Image 1 (cartoon, helix red, strand yellow):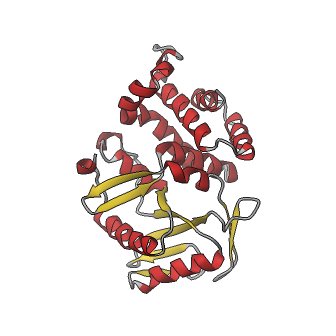
Image 2 (cartoon, rainbow, N blue to C red):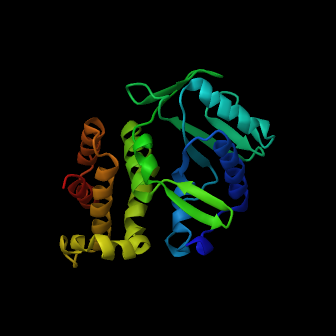
Image 3 (tube, one colour):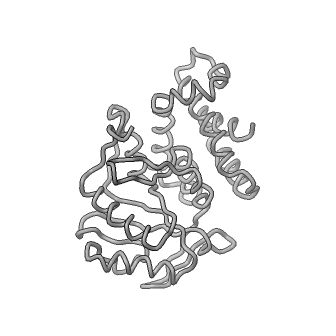
Length: 257
């Protein structure tokens, strides 16, 4: 897989520099968002998303607010990044690529929110980020450069939460639907090996047959990711119930098995 992974050179620079800082501070991290998606799609260029972006979103496990500023300041000290004037989580790499640092972990309050106060108050809902961490994928790009990326199932989970927070964000819906569309082709070996039973659960004559298989398997894996957190499980059930399409119903079927 390593030989086929493709990443934009400038984004590779961002991640190489950032990962060295994260490793120096011994913190867990992983890519989320469009770059995490596109890295996993890059082995099959014909499956790539039509919506490209150079924004880089990195989830970082942080103890508290001061810990976040320590990491942020270390990135700024490299000389490659500048800070956004008002948004605490946003940096710019060489004044061109936007980099969002998404803190999660002990920094979250009981409502699963993070709050940052510099340069002004910033509040963000972070459900699912901690739960997705153990299921991240480590992908070798070069011999001495590995990317830590959110799994496709984890991306769907996070996008469901994001959609719930902002239902007018149609890009979350389109991203989920695109993952469902290409998931079978990307993961067919694993499907045949570990989830062959799902192929008998839907009619092969259904034009959405492969997407339904993908949705069912993603639902199963989302359930595993959230296992033990009753509040988040119920929240996902409610989100899926508000958009009763065939594919979302199939995610729900896998999620409630």
